[in-house]
Length: 388
Image (cartoon, rainbow, N blue to C red; front, side, top):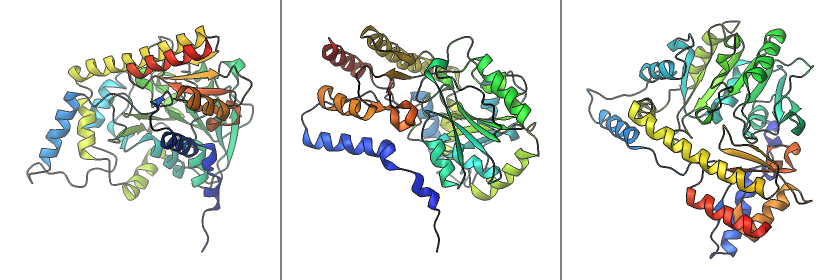
């Protein structure tokens, strides 16, 4: 028997496993310490009432054969797809069969590689969220890394080399930078010229509020010929524990890609949870949207407070305007794991060392505004006291 040796390339010591173990050990040895996480990637607000009520009604549907739902469509229910088209793509010409409902962007951005030839050349900008490179390893594919430089404001520059597949994430995790129309136009032009496909992770689109930042790559002319876009309900409607996402495969992408993927999906996926999809549908109601936008505003306000505090202390800080993440340059002459240990032991604060996102990130750390307002304010107080 032979196993997939590429799985061994997924190194725990370079990712969140080691971090969790360090925090767990510290808490065990220091049970009286109040630990505050600025590394949180999860949400700190509950699912709002209109969505909960819709999910309760969906549970009731399953209690009667008149309304019971068994196996649903592999690509998702039309009731949710219709809401997505009417709200997220209301000015873009898509059809229901181009939308795929799934159970998490983390799965989607990896499994989509099954669509492409195993010899396809894959480009991944770095620093970047580790799931992309790990997903590539799981499927025995080779990676070409494209360093993202501070001098470019952490916006990936179009390479001279030709690649078949390019991963882009905007608003970006970890840097918190959202890409402009001009930035994305260059990548769309590159993809058209090189017959490449852009895998566009747009999980944080709900946080975009700057006017020159597109909420979808499909706002760029001809992007529907070269881009597959992924979106998530995790952060904007607190579905991180429920699991519901979607992605778009446009019919205008060459080689009949959409129909090929539909056949694959029918044979490999039984569809996302009915209850989750009813909750996601309810999130588009006017009542729900008011509360959702208030929650997002709270998260962004947390992020702005953190950015202001760190900049006041002399740190160089990126991101935060259109994302809940900040990318902070380390002032001390130490690496990012050493700074993580310092913050944990001295300040009882969790940050994410930049090395987790790639070697280029070792001079930085990531912090998040997704925590509670109270925790953010306590953390700022501790940090200001330490540096002053």
